[in-house]
Length: 420
Ligand SMILES: N=C(N)NC/C=C/[C@H]1O[C@@H](n2cnc3c(N)ncnc32)[C@H](O)[C@@H]1O
Image (cartoon, rainbow, N blue to C red; front, side, top):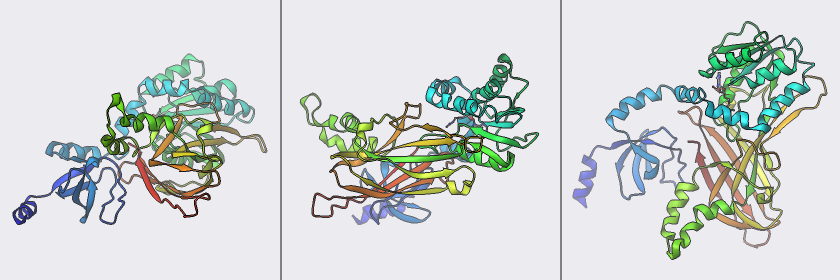
């Protein structure tokens, strides 16, 4: 054993990069964020290694780490220079795939059309900024359905060239001016009266385009100007997800008459430790009434507030069922330009028309039976990734207080997931 120990001491530690966030469970586990560089000193098992991060030691899950090779070291340093990954991000918006998906989302696009239509009279002679206009659909709605004095359609990707053609093709070049560039850097000829943008990502904030909207608000929106959306809310609900659980976990119980259950810990690690985007929850999957856990006022929200946003929740179980996880979605509101006018709402939850965002499912490590009268209370924390600025970690903590069993079956689960 001594020789082995000496070998370990002699072998210089290897550098690994974290592929995703990890929040340690026990005191001897070392938490880290995606992109962190860890030094692995020993590998006592295939699953858990002994490593240090900024000199602090602890056990880390091997599956979260990737060896940094010499050439990657070179390349990674270059990529680390762009924490916003803008080349990749705006590159993706330079192609039609994402724009087709957004334009095909009738609920989303018709809502913005409704906002312009219902504020048509008030938009007369107003200056509008459409931040991240993409193909320019919102700007074209403004020019077609109202008479603003000008619409500045700002788009950072190469799509802007086509957007100019679409503006011309639809006879809107008198009103709509397409400006190619990042909204944070664009100099508008004037302050605008209305800042409209479709910035919402999965779980409301993923992509963190909202930061660009806040910076544009502070630079380009005149005092008393209108933000569309005016407010946003992230909503959460405990839910059943039996079909997903069956598909990813129960499957291993008896495939083709064989017992594959030893693979279930791997399945839990691979499928249930990250959120499932584009999940479609049915209303009957909800175990309780939903709760708005984070509410954003687009007039007062500050960029620094985006680093960490917290919400509390307390759910009362209305019907007995299996608690597989939490589902999240968002709602945004567009206040009327007219005093006392009705606001327009875009709700991406299970009781509204499905949107391209669908909902986001966070699976528990293992399902739990809950009964009418039980309560599920805890907190959610959205923690923006300190390295990769378009990413965040969602951490959910909760307890179940059961009314049926006399023992207080508190189950404190620390559950986290990273947006890849
Ligand atoms: N709703 C979501 N998630 N994305 C749909 C909206 C994304 C569009 O906004 C553009 N965009 C994003 N951030 C900026 C920025 N800072 N300046 C200029 N254009 C920008 C992208 O290139 C897409 O065309």
